Length: 211
Image (cartoon, rainbow, N blue to C red; front, side, top):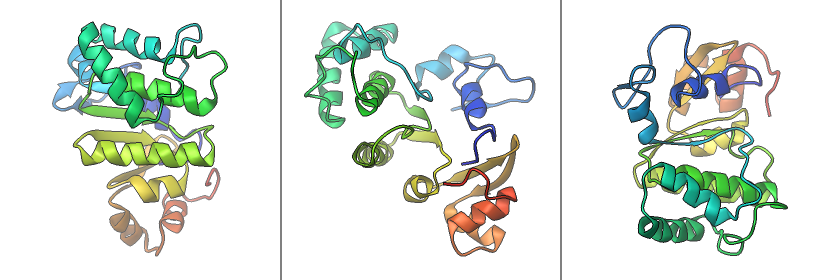
């Protein structure tokens, strides 16, 4: 959680090995993000900020392409894509070309791509950006479902309501450094505030960028 420009996306890009850190060390399930990138990526699904899709392909073809990159067979893909289409409510457009998709449809397709190989760890960079109210509610339910079945879900946001509803643990980033971390209750207690929004403002020292 943090205001725009705090370093949220940069942190996530390092964790999913798209950006090499200048120093320090980060581990994902014990794997070093610099020295053991293949192991990190194999066990991770990523939804990047404003994730694009291949518009000349159908949603199904987009998902299948990424599944094959992860070594999945056609039989595995057929079953998994149908499963994801049902879970993400994509059945009405799964076999349509992505050109002309709404932002919500694009996000669902990109999320299905990230989940196709059943990764243990999932990174979502501002996943509700650009979504309408109903699409946002649906995506939040998907995130809760993923958490309930044992996935580790790490996502970035600057939207307080989103964080309050979804998160077990929060890291507040401001100006590239960790300003506070812990459970919502721990953060409220450490800042001396009764609600998470006030705790956030207290932690970063300003209400700039707060939604």
